[in-house]
Amino acid sequence: MNPVLVIDDEAQVHLYDPLRHEVVDRGQLRRLHPLLEACAHRIGANLSAGLRRPVHVAAGELEQGAWDDFMAGMEDPTFIATALVVEVDERLLLHFPIATALSLVEVQLGGDGKTELERVALTDLELSMVSSIASHVFSALRASLDTVLDINLTGLQRHRSPHFVKMARPGDTAFRAEVSVTIGDGASCSIWLYLSLATMRSLLSTLEQEEDDHLDPDAVLPNVDRSIEEVPLELFVAYPPVRLSAAQILSLRPGDPESIILLGVGTTEQVELDILATGRTRIGRGVLVTNGKHAGCMVRRWERRDER
Image 1 (spheres, helix red, strand yellow):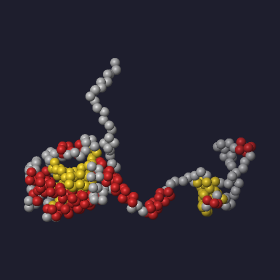
Image 2 (cartoon, one colour; image 1 turned 60 degrees about the vertical axis):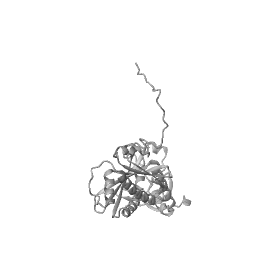
Image 3 (cartoon, helix red, strand yellow; image 1 turned 135 degrees about the vertical axis):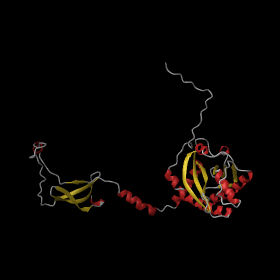
Image 4 (cartoon, helix red, strand yellow; image 1 turned 180 degrees about the horizontal axis):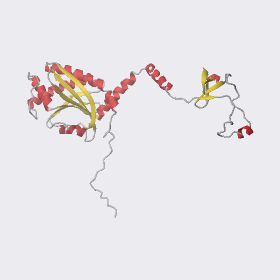
C-alpha cells in the first residue's frame, strides 16, 4: 500500500529570497582587507584621543556565515551598538563582549584595564560609557568609509541583547571581522564588526567601480598579449608530394620491409618544407635536416599574410 501524503492546510508558501544563503567569494573578501586596515588605524587614533592612552587596533579577516549562527555565539546580556547605512537601509553592528566593555570602562575611570571582573551585565552608567566609546569607533568607520558608504551616525542604537537587533533574518548571510584593541601595554580585547549582505554588496560594487575607473589600458594590453602568446597551436610540416601509379600503390603490403615509398631525394639534397598551422594555413618555410635516425625541420623564414 502506498503511503498517504498529508498536506497541512495551514502551511504557508514563502517567496524565495535570492539574498538568503548567498556566499561571497573569499577572493573578493580579501580585497576589502586594506580598507579594514585603514579603518583599524583610524579607530586606534580616535580611541587614543578619547581614552587619553595609546591604543593599537588591528583588524582581522572577514568571515561569512548565517546571521543566526553569529547571533547564537554572542553573550546575552551583552553590549551591541548599531548605525544606519543609508545607502542600503541596513545596520552596521558593533559587538562589545562584556569583558571588553568592562576593560574599556576601567580605563575611562583611570585604571589600566587589566582587572578581570566577574560580571555578566553592565550597569546603566557603564552602558552609557561604552556607548561613548562605540560612538568613537563609528566616527572612525564613517571617516574611513566616507567614499564608499553613507553611514548615519544620528541613527545610533544600543542593545543589551542580540535578540533585539534587527540586522538580518535567520539564515541570511552576514559578515564579521574581529577588531583587536590593545591599550598601552595591556592585554588585547576584541570588538566585533558585523555587516549585512546588502552592505557587503555595496562595498564590493563601489570598489570594483573605482578600480575600473582607474584602469590603465596600456597596463592591461601586455598581459593580454602574453595570454594570447600562451595559446597552443598545432603545427604540421608538409613534405614534397610523391606520385605513385595505382599499380604501385596496390603492390604495397603492410609490414613488408620491401614495401617502401621512396621520397625521391638523396640525403645530401636540401629539401624545402612547408610549415602549416591549425587549419593547414602555411605560415612559414623550412628545410629538412637529419641527425642520425631522426629527421626534422629547420625554420628558414615566417611568411606574411600577403605571401600566402
